[in-house]
Length: 439
View 1 (cartoon, rainbow, N blue to C red):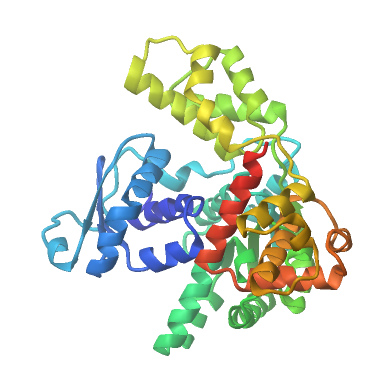
View 2: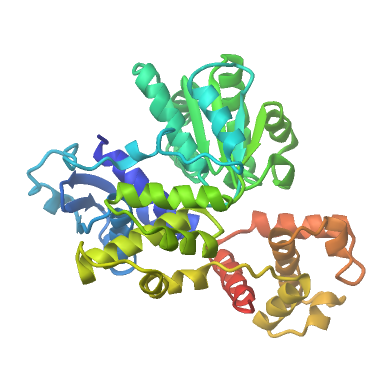
């Protein structure tokens, strides 16, 4: 059973897929769960302005996240300091029949060819079979199970060593905590928190790349833990070699340990995931339904689990437990999810054309020599998108633009990564959506 804080961290983890890091840090930094029971979560937000914004823009996201965690509807109450005094239940009260992050264990991780190496490495670390896998660096696209393995390591180590100081942090949170510590003059407290860990787990470490002060602080934190022979585990959406704005001294340290990648699950693994999730939710899906989902959803584990949850919700809310679930009904229930993920792979020409169109330019202008501010930014975004969405090398990308070589492309990518404001991040999301719509 998990504390209110751990459940809240699970909510924030799910919100990461829907909100930008800036939005999360701006609007949720002061949020604190002060009560949770079987049907309601109460969140304290001391600032009136932030509370009103979260109420208007993000409350629905919080309710969706709770529904995904617990497969049930929760009410969400946002309160200020004054109202919080009327909440009679203690802050650590938990739902009596809800497991929260206890789901993310090795037992509940479906192993297949695409993730067996990462799973074996994570389990070896958790079972303390070796000291050679330090740091362990797990990388892969979103929704493939990287965070699940981090939680599983934490769960196993905590079971064996309840006295251990286990630090689990996301890259964005580490950066924001450092900024706050500098502003408030609490650098010593910050360093003590992270450098005294017996087990250090960081999710989405790619976020610190290009953030010079954060990288500097993290470098010394890493060295302190490593020299003390404390286990370190990272996850990232890419290998260190593709984190172009990462400091070289960090890259070499990451690569000195064990790198383990996770790929999208194959058909057999997808089938096992669907069956396992449906059983957890109290359903036995017909084989033809399982096959239909596995054949049409190939991108990631999270999408497969989301499909099963949607079928369960539809059954419970619209038809009842005794209704028949068929391929026809499932196709109708989850058809909108197919639109979100597609087998379409954009070409460099597609990316250039959509980026140019977004900025009111022609493809020729984007590929050419114009150095106006608008064209330069569009060209940098196009290079960044081509590198992110295709397998082209830096040299090949440079060849798509007049007079550009691999060093120019690398500089452009770094500029985009280093200036990733909330506005720019949203622009890139909009352009990506336009590109995918071509499929």
